Image 1: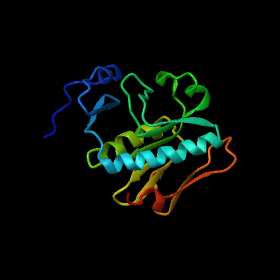
Image 2 (image 1 turned 90 degrees about the vertical axis):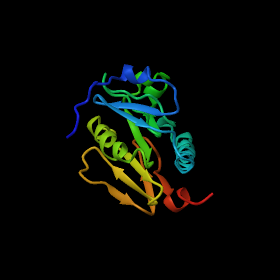
Image 3 (image 1 turned 180 degrees about the vertical axis):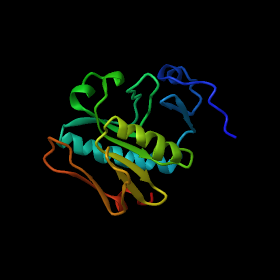
Image 4 (image 1 turned 30 degrees about the vertical axis):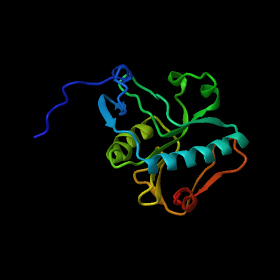
Length: 181
């Protein structure tokens, strides 16, 4: 029999957590705890951050960040692996003011699969993030989610993003993204 949660967590609770190497997040009161990421996770995040960063230099529609304390509600605070915030909000240099994310990327780890695929995905859909990439480096695929999607598009060749105001889409070849070191 499942035990009821003994504490309803808030964003303030998460911000007060110890710096012990774990990643603490909360979604609608549910505490999400993940250990530090594995090297494969970090390589994929780095490659995506470089590609998205280069794209945003040529198409300044927003600003990319590897992580950040994003909160839409008092009981919610997430730290995406990579996010692109709308330009005017990014210029505030305040996580609290970054509410309109243009792109969110989470790279799956064995310890984060359930929370990234279900809990956080539903949150990103709820708040209207227009594009959510859920990257599975082990399976060499990316699930592409939009706010209205009931099921993801599973991409194995390439992923693309063409935000409003950009002259051309960003296209990322997945064979290159997942190449060995």
